[in-house]
Image 1 (spheres, one colour):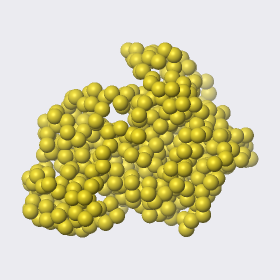
Image 2 (tube, helix red, strand yellow):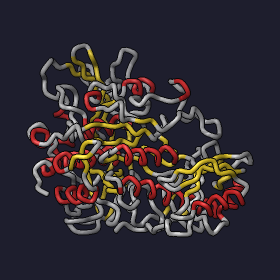
Image 3 (cartoon, helix red, strand yellow):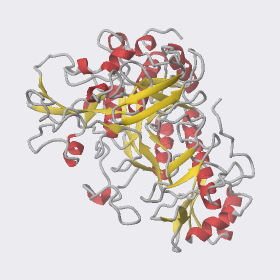
Image 4 (cartoon, one colour):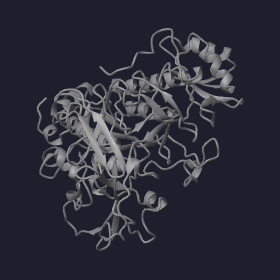
Length: 556
């Protein structure tokens, strides 16, 4: 039983998730909204649609449309006064503006500059026709979980009939090590790029495509492409192979170019996943503008409390809709080095627009979303030796599984970028970030260029729980490939059964001894994380480290 979640969807209640679809502002940490009309998502409970409409009308707003699948009304209203009036209705349990609700939980590798004693040209490797995956020796993560040529790839690479949705910043569907498994037809982009934030500060930057709408096979950030590659880069004699190299990748883009996730695209992605027959989704983001969402924190204003209640309940509705329709939900647990069962301080919320953060005290009733939402499998990260990564969040009630996410300091006190996770990277994103030179040469050892037949592809090392979650998603895809039943979209398998087998096939790992583990990192003060629980289930590793080889051979 996951902690802190109570149903807010009982009869007679309405969740007014005020998802502002236009610009807002934050002054002194208190939400303020311009007086002009703006759009909101007003969620209602079973049978409460008419009362929701009445509340909207009485508050000076106008109902524009109704989304019956998730139970909300799109309404316009005159700013903050409209929200406050809705909050005063006994039909309303939450009001939340549509600011940023997601951050990509990956930490980019920087690598050592080539000038620092590196021999030869950094990051370039040429292979011939018919060569095996040339970068496989760098994939310590796949060796750890048995997703190798002589492991699960040989017996259970996954079926094309299994659809894996990546809710992220996009997927570079043209990348040579992704394209064979990418479904352009099923992929969707639910976001429109926003060049600047409400305060005029740079957000996504200039739009590259008409109407600021990127194609479904495009990724300006690189985060989503890395995640997708870890799940299902094919075995094609090029670069790397993913955990389940035979399954189909579907881009469900909900993240901006900047790595931010707004509410409406996120719930639309989950709803589409359910209706399109997606089997499992990977969610490597966490909910903002509040790192921790508290329903009744005295440190927050009434409007802020209602906003956080709205995020908790609104996301839960979308997740429930997807899970009830056969979508297995997998999430990164987060990179805050925090025991989620004992959070004490939140210093980074609200974090959109910029410079809105303040320090507030929090407790165990405050939730990290979607990692702590009901029905979601949350994954912590481990490094090359199998220890919990220094950055990974943890908690006896929160950690369900663990998987390789990388840890540059695991195996020695000095930084080593190759202790991260290597996966595909979009060339356009690397160029935009100045990570490669004009002639395509990588500028540091965290970027690898692999060329064959005059075609070059790029890969990068990243660390984070974002990198751990797709390993679990890949193993889930193997299980669905083996035990799923035919349906109109390909194969389907109840999420509860997938979860049970994920736990059963994981490699149990006990807490360290002593349980208070001290992380010693160059130039950083020692940090202590305490592991609670048994070998069968504990706060560092959950039910254990995911195991593709066992998933490939287990009997149900």
